[in-house]
Structure formats: C-alpha cells, structure tokens
Image (cartoon, rainbow, N blue to C red; front, side, top):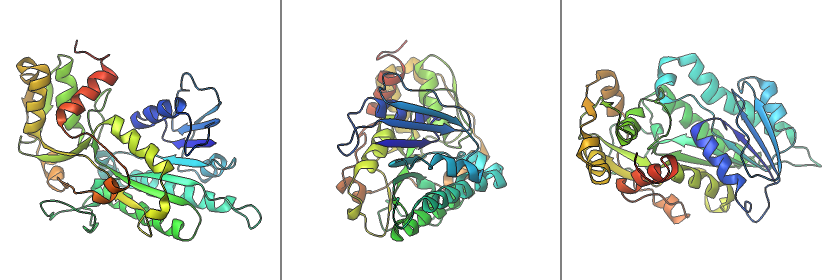
Length: 329
C-alpha cells in the first residue's frame, strides 16, 4: 500500500507519519511506500522498512498535485492548511492554500482515472469545528447547520462540500473529519487564534510563563494530538458505506472551560505551574473566540468507532508521556 501525506511536516503530519511507520498496515494491507509532502521537506520516519519519498513543494501549483498522485497512492491524507488566525489576516493566501489547492488535488485525482484503469483513492481531509458559526445551541449535534463566521471556517466548509460531491460522483472515497482544537500542541506557539489553549498548559509544565488572553469561563472543544492521529487512521480504514452522502463529521472531544484546564493543571503539576499563567486580555482574540462552538454531541462519529479523551487530566498526561519523557522536569 502507498500512502501520501500532504502537510507531513506539520505537527499532526509528523505524528501521523511516525504512527503509520510502525503500524502493521491499514485495512489489513501492509504499508510499503510513504510519500511525504509539504512546503518544506518533511523528515523521514525512523524504523520504516518501506520506500519513502520526501517532497518540498508548493501545493498551490497545479503541477504539484499532478505529480503527487501520478503514482496513484491508495490513501491520501490532506492535512495542509494555514491556521485560523493567518487565514483571517491573509485573505488571498487562505483561499489559495486552504481551498484552491484542495480542489486542484481533487482534479488531479480525477485526471488519473480512466475507463480501463479507474482510480478512486481513500481521501482523508482534515476539516475543523470552525465550519460552525454563532448563534450556537448549548450542545451542537450532528444535524446543526454549517454557517462559519471566519474565512478559515468558510474555506473548510466549502472543502467539505467538495468531498461530498467528488465522492458522490465516484472520483474519490472521501472522509472529512472536523478536528477539535488539538491540545496540548508541542513546540512553539503558532498563529492559530486557538493557540493559547495549548500555551497556558505547555509552558507552565516546563516552568515558563504563559499569557491567557480570554476569561476563565471560555469553554472549548479539545482533543489531544494522539487522538487526532487516531481519528485520521480510523478514517483511512473505516467502512465509508456507513457515511452515506454526508462524508464529513465532527470528531469526539472534551468540552472544557479555561478554568477546567487550569484546575487540571493544578492537579497534575501543582500551584507553582498555575501561577505562571498571566491574564492579559486581548480583545481581538476574545471576539474570534466568541464565534466558535463550545460543546458537541458527535454521536455519529462515536457510533462509527472514533474515540478521544474523557478528562483534561488525560490530555495533560498524553503531553507529558509523548513530549516530556513521561515525567515533569
């Protein structure tokens, strides 16, 4: 089996690559080839016995998509995107990368298929809960309408419709997964408006100060990087006949207020870590966050076998285990 990951140099892309490199296979088939692509060359995974191709390429260029699917990968993970804050600030760049590049990929896949040699890969697309916009019900179920209030959310919502339509026409076998905010993200802060949810956990865990730009009563929907990778792998193997015409769904997660996060940090790391969180209100971030959904009832995804953490203590422990060697400094 040949697996292509577009956006493989990002945090989730790296973790997905490493998990796939050590899996026995997908859907009972051995993974013999990995193609890893991003705007910068991704790193090759350690311990993988198959062939690895590393590509640094501009995904907005039509020739990039054509070359990536020329060998007809069996499974394609499309993770490439610019994050919410950057997509809002850089309108043209957001649409070029988050929407136009994805449609170019779909057309490149369609161009590969012929009457005598059809090509219908499993395509896993990472969408976002940003496809939903206020006003929200107390709990967003699987029937709530998609009316995004940001450019990023609009781009993801349009891509979801494309996944539906190209799957309906038989050009791809697509699955769209709406990721919760991935927390706790390792590494340095990025331009995502949601980045502070990770910052206020990650930095205090290693003795550094972190800035909290919103109030402690803000509630959000979270899942760990480990769960996010699990969602992707499950989507690559699931029976898509169970999805029907609606190919995208909200993933399981954990609804937690910022206060809940801080309480979990106190239980895991103590008061000294909590004291490193400094409240510095940022009106721009506050307004963006007000337009985000908070709590979900993703029964469709749960019934199809997707799983995530149940408490924020678990999310913190995943970060400690996966990023800090299993214990606090």
